[in-house]
Length: 384
Image 1 (cartoon, one colour):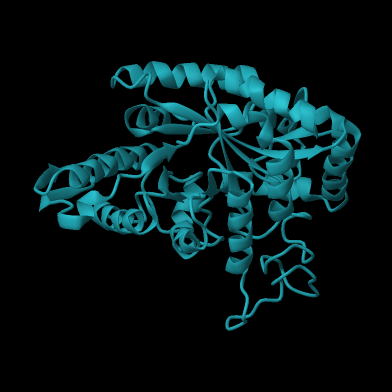
Image 2 (cartoon, rainbow, N blue to C red; image 1 turned 180 degrees about the horizontal axis):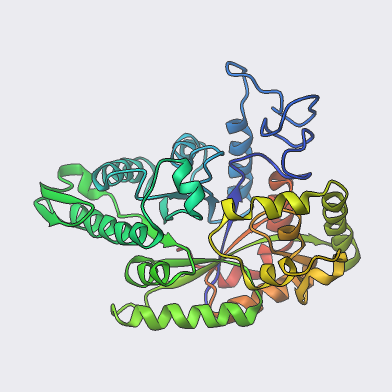
């Protein structure tokens, strides 16, 4: 089975320390004395946070990552804008830009994507998302209910594919209509971006089964991942796509030469989170981050007593402590280079085709992963 590796661009600040710490790079903090690079940024400065993201993108490319994932959060940089700025600073790196059908009409999305693909050699990948929670959706002006948002996304992709494949496309749906439009002339040279999506609800799974090239998951216990892959494949069979859809996994990595050094770095994060009481803050904002708790989050969320660092290993080298102290996506591979490689192979054997790996700080850890993890898979890599 083939395998590919992407990493992540931190669009809402670096996380060498806890989120919001003024020692982090970027100005995503509450203010006061700051020491991180561009943490005191003012509009008009010679260097901005985008310049730091450019460093990470180039480091990812130099170290052999196939692309970068950009999360679309209401209080972070906007992914399509960022990838447009960075595309000309890299040569082959793919950009996974997350957005909601709420953000664009199908035609605007098609025209923008075609322009980007023509300019970059087809290096744009779409990650179609539909919002994590009703509270966040209302904050940004989207008042449709959860299931309606997925119905809208299905129509959105129907229209996108129609515009991309016809110069005279017609459509009459609940959310979108079209009368004779479509890509024409040189625009037709561009390739439709690969489609990624995520979400564990039934509408989310059905949308993925019908439209996604890649179904993306936050990491969980391998047994849970196996069950989810089987369910999505079964749903995709209804659309003749059971062998077409592929799977991606997002997981942080804390890896060092030895197990002891990796555990020490993970414990540094954990102890600081406990000391600063980020556990309660994470719990208070859980509803703003995601509509669903994963199995391990339910387990530690239902217990009120204090928990030890080592209680968060849900599987060998698979640590849920980041989620407990409020650092998304929540799960990390923690261990020696040898053991992290072994866990990646285990998830790969379950059916994971592409891994979104990142460490903190992203720049230095792109080199660490590129030098100590990715070389073990050189003969097995396959571009998306």
